[in-house]
Image 1 (spheres, rainbow, N blue to C red):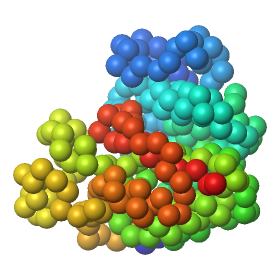
Image 2 (image 1 turned 180 degrees about the vertical axis):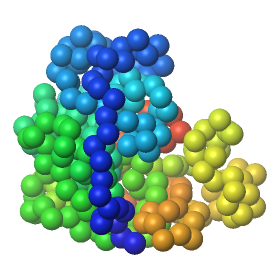
Image 3 (image 1 turned 90 degrees about the vertical axis):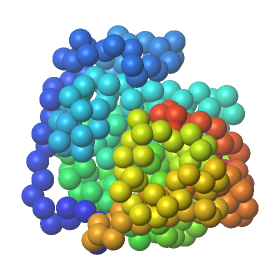
Image 4 (image 1 turned 45 degrees about the vertical axis):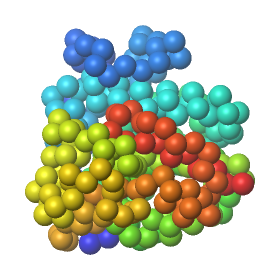
Amino acid sequence: MISINSRAETRGENVGIARDHLGQDTGEVPWDRSRIPLEAALEADTYPIPSTEQREGYYGPNHFNYWASGLRDYCQLMEWLERKGARHGSLLDIGCATGRLIRHANKDFPEVIGCDINRAHVDWVGRNLRRDIKVFQNTSVPTLPLPDNSIDVVTAFSVFTHIECFDTTWLMELRRILRPGGIAWLTIHEERTWREMTPAWPIYGALIDHPDYVAAKDSPTLPNDRTVFRWHTERSYSSNVFYTQNYIKDIWGRILSVKDIFPAIPFFQEVVVLQKE
């Protein structure tokens, strides 16, 4: 399967707007409130929040934290772009799911596009979020229906953590659609993830039943520069992938220039920032 739910009849279940769940705000998911104050964020986003089931269980019953997590990641992205003076006219979020990030992007990006291999997510965004957000279903085949040199910023949160093959082919496709100077903001599992992983981290629960992981988990270093734990199912991207920084710099750096690598939020991933020269 190169996509998910392509033929299914999907629903647009939601749980109201962020303001309805303000009582769930305990500060557990902080964002830069000097950049986007809470009241301003609530006024700007009066669109529905997906149900827990619709968003595949992320953040459980805490609907406010789900909403705030997109705001948190968006603020981190914008802080970096503005500090580096990077152009941000158009944004493509690959693996956009139910629009966790792109629902916050209208203030800074005149053009916002999302795509996902799961049709249920694409349909939910199309039914519930702003009409000026373009959204489409892609596949796990490394190709996107977008023109050359058309995008300023590509984001992919927890996407390359599951690409068991064709990671470099995907980077070549990103290189094609990015404008010169364009940025790719990708989160990965890296050597630090491997060294510091604890049973409390979500990635641990996803791996502990895999026999190859059990055999290798006590090693202080990754078994390979690109280590793949593949689950043999019919689903696309049913794997967990780890990269070393050497692999990122030596292999990915041949396709796009590596500009930065630093801890993501949540902390068990790294952000890799690449640029089309």
